[in-house]
Image (cartoon, helix red, strand yellow):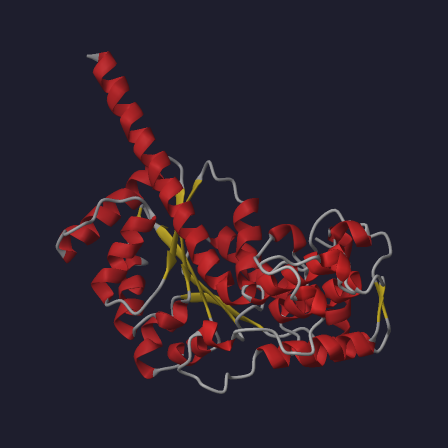
Length: 365
C-alpha cells in the first residue's frame, strides 16, 4: 500500500521468494556456481543448506527458470517424516508416475522405466528434494539407490537436496558414508554480513523501481543487520514494517530511532499472552476504556474516522500492518501450496500429453 508514496513500482520487501529480486551475495554466488556445476555434470547429488529464510528457495527458483524446460523433466518433493518406501512414492508422484499401491519392486521398475524413457527422448530428469533435514537415514539410502540407475553409462537421475543446517549433521553420520561418496558438491548459505545487508536492501529497492526514496540514516543499517542476524527473510520483514512506519508518518527518510520503534512493536506483538490457554478473542476488551473520545459512544456500531486524530491513510496503514503480522507465519505454508500446485500442473500436462498420444494412435488405426 505504501509503494506509491515512495515512488515504487512493486513491494520491495515481500516475504515470498521471487527470483526477480535475487541478490548475489558472496555465499549465494558460490551456491549458484555449485548448482550450475551440478546441472552441467548431470550426475550425483548437490547439497545446499542454509538457515530458514536464507534464500535457498529463491536461488533454486532462479535456477529452474534458467533451465530449458523442453529437455529437462523436474520433480519437486517437499519431505516430511516419511518412511523409505513412501519417499519413493513421493518421487514417483513428483514426476507424474503412477505408483499408488504398487509393491516396492514394481515401484522401482516403474521409476527406472520412466527415467529410461525420458533419456531416450533426449531429456534428463532432475529431482529436487526440499526440507531434506526431515529425511530419515533409510529414505536417504533409497535416494542413493535411485542414483544407481544408468542407461548406456549415463546417469538417469540427478538430485538436489536442499535443507536446513541440521542436514549437514545427518550427512556426517557413519551410516551416510556411501551417500557422501555420491555427493558432487555441497554448499552452506550463511547470513549476510553488515555491508551485504545494506547492499541487499538497496538492491531490492532498486528492483522495485526506487529512484532514491526511501533513504536511511547510515547507522540504521547496522541496527537492521543486528536485529535480523543477516537472514534475508528477517530483513524483509523488518524493512517492510519500517517502510510502513515511514508511510504512516509521512516521511521518506528513516532513522535509527524508527528502526528501534519497529523492533519494540514487533517485540510487543511477540509477547506471550498472560493466559496461554485463552482464546484470541479473549484479549479483545468488551468495551473501550473510559478515557476514549466521547465521539465513539455517540454512534454505536460505527466509527467516524473524520472525528478522530488520525487520517484515513493512517487507518489504511494500520490495517495493512495488522495483516502483515500474519504474513511471516504463513509464508512457509504458501510456499508448500505453491510447490504442490506446480506438481499438479506437471501431472496435468503429462496426462494431456498421454491422452494426445492415445488420440493420435487411434487416428492411425
